[in-house]
Amino acid sequence: MTHPIRALLTLGFSTLSLLTACGSSEAGPPSPYASADGFCEKWAEAACNKTVIENCGAASADACVTSQATFCTSLIQADHYARKYAPDCVKAVKAAYLDAKLTRDEYEVVRRLGGVCAKVLSGAGGQGASCSSALDCDTLGGLTCVTPPGKSGSCQKPEIVSGGNVCGGDAQVCADGLYCNGANCIANASEGAACGADVPCADGLGCEGDDTAATCQRLGAVSDECATGSDCASTICAVAPSATTGICVDTVVLSQTEPACTALR
Image 1 (cartoon, one colour):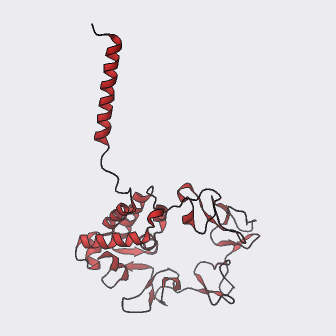
Image 2 (cartoon, rainbow, N blue to C red):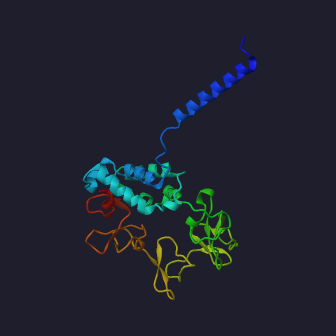
């Protein structure tokens, strides 16, 4: 007769061996999002669909992917790469390039790392840490760099303050369209009003002039002449490769003469 303790030990070792074997077989390959390079490869594959390749005149799908991965790498600071929202970003890139046309919001995503793609960058700064930009803070933890008037920036979970209310606390941020004048949240400066680093202009306006006499002026509408995106309300200035000026647009249609295609072929 088998001793009961010996039987239990044998069963225990058998179970452990089975679990170990199962764990090894289920480990699988590492995630493609584990590194910034892997993320950029997935980004490029999402961008380089058949229509994009044809419209931009890429030599091949591989050429497009290689070029776009390099562009993605130029946007990503590897030390700040955070993988949590990387798959969501790649989905947004794929959707943006699907019809080879980029709306203003889509352009922000694929050319300036806007929208959900902004979440693939994060910093190390915890609550209260000093900062000069959001990338100094743990953005995945809900922190951003808040710089109240007359104070240094610190990593905080923003406390949104509505118009007319008191502001200036370490975590207080005025709602969209408002700024803190040192005491209260008030509306951004209107057309013709003085502006500067601490006094932003209302939507559709840009701060123009020297540091001592800058005023809010209306930004270019669609089809108005521009030199850079900052001249346009849409933030997109379409400039031909051989030109120095172009026109403001709100949708970019990919073609062999579109500058955005340089990184897609």
